[in-house]
View (cartoon, rainbow over the protein chains, first blue to last red):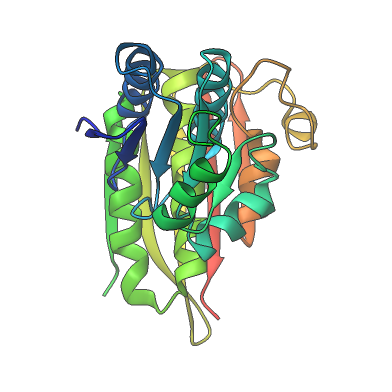
Length: 120
Length: 133
């Protein structure tokens, strides 16, 4: 199941569905790293609201994704981590260190808007 | 009635099936949404360990009862290389650097009970249980 990537202005938005496989997540990472260049995007939002599991592989892949996007010159915000997912991640020590998170899509867009060098 | 489901685990797509079946099995047992997330995550880690280290195996899901307290037992079984030193593997930080998984201590933190039986050259059986509150 491919994750659709939407383009909104200079941002890319990926809305992750439940039942995401390791391969889907790696495909999403590679597609976003590529499209940040083709669309000259300044920000990427990954909406994980619907995700019911964030295990070690998913955390590591999202962490790497954010690092790769940063190296490409854009910013990443992970939005919508649900309370029970946050609880599980904290218990496992999966802290997504260095990755920006926001409550939901609205807050994620607000964050990117505030820190966008081209919008000021 | 004893509820039991077995999910064969060979590919990474089976990891997704195993955790979906786990959620289906645990949902009627009165677990909180947080416990469901912990159980599903544990199944995900156990299934991935099978794919990564053993190549193939299975995840078995069973409804358990302790007095009047319902629970779910997850049995991850493989005929892989086995774990040479289980006590060592259970210690936090055992997972060698570069390894992606949380290792067994991570799974232990998500569940209430855990038992590991492993024979080198024959395989590993990991049994974990979570009790509903």
